[in-house]
Image 1 (cartoon, rainbow, N blue to C red):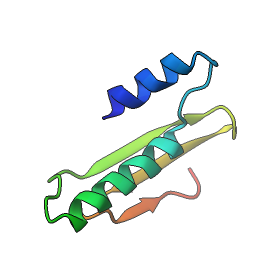
Image 2: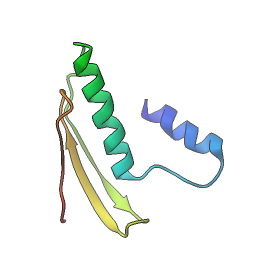
Image 3: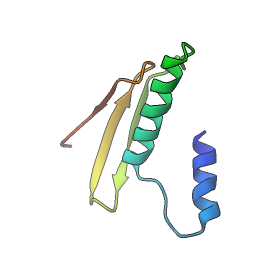
Image 4: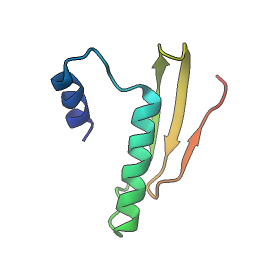
Length: 74
C-alpha cells in the first residue's frame, strides 16, 4: 500500500511527497477500516520522521484496531 502511495507521488511529478504525519494518518484510517470489516492487520505501527514543511520531527503509533497516538513534543 505504501509503495502505491509513493508511486502515486512519483507519477504526479510535482516534487511533493507525503509527510510522516500524512502517512500516519493514512495508516490509521486503513487499520480502522480493516477492523470494521472484522479482518484486521495484526500489526502495531510506529511511524516517525522529520517534516521539513513544519520544521520538526514526528512520532506516531497505530495499533491493529486503529487506535492512534501522536507525540506532541520531541
